[in-house]
Figure 1 (cartoon, rainbow, N blue to C red):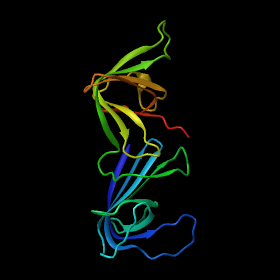
Figure 2 (figure 1 turned 90 degrees about the horizontal axis):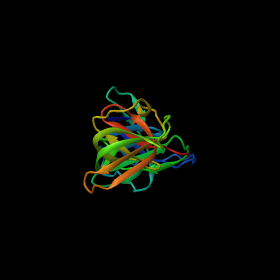
Figure 3 (figure 1 turned 180 degrees about the vertical axis):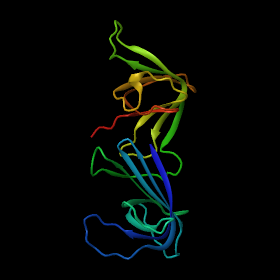
Figure 4 (figure 1 turned 90 degrees about the vertical axis):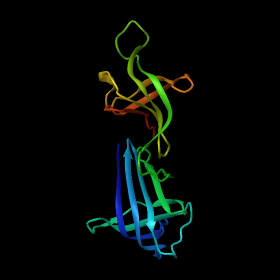
Amino acid sequence: MKLSVQSLTQVEVFPYYADVPLEVAPCLTSGEAEYIRGTLNDMAYEGLKILSSAPQAHFLTGATYVALGRDERGAQIQTHWMYCTQTTPVPTLAVARNHSTPGVFAPAPHIDQSLLLSLEPLEEIIGVSSYLPSNLDAVEFRLGLSGDLISTAFGAPHAMGIRVNDPFLPPHFLTGARHLTITARSSRTKQSIGLHQLVCVQASDPAVFLSEAHP
């Protein structure tokens, strides 16, 4: 899981029309912006937050744009094309892609802190395995005492998962492990939940398990 935020100057933003060879005038020139990129499993995120722009800058929510700018060293950066997701108080552009399903794109919210959203606090987080030799139908492992039900902050589509604080993971629950089942209890309602077909994307503290992407 990676998230980078880069400052850009001399930003120009152009309308983007897929597969149409058309010269267009920029809708923004000499702007400053934050360029955010993130990757999580098969998903990729790109976003641009306009920090300053000329008064005549004009954006339409839902329209697609591509941007050019200069990084801190003066090198030119070109973004992937993105959707305009809001025009006020400042224009923001973002797109989410899923590399396991090429050609699938989706608008995305502006992200500058975390690729994951916390939805519900969890306790008594248990890993369930039926692959080990045993006389029992399933073997349970306590993975941690606390954590969260999570989802990706962007996606095409979004992925649900579980984050485990201070984890203790058996060898078959480490980074890259797939087809995992985890159960837990909501700290708020005490209801039990279970998620299947998870992949471990991070085994360090906190450990992160997300639903597997399917083409």
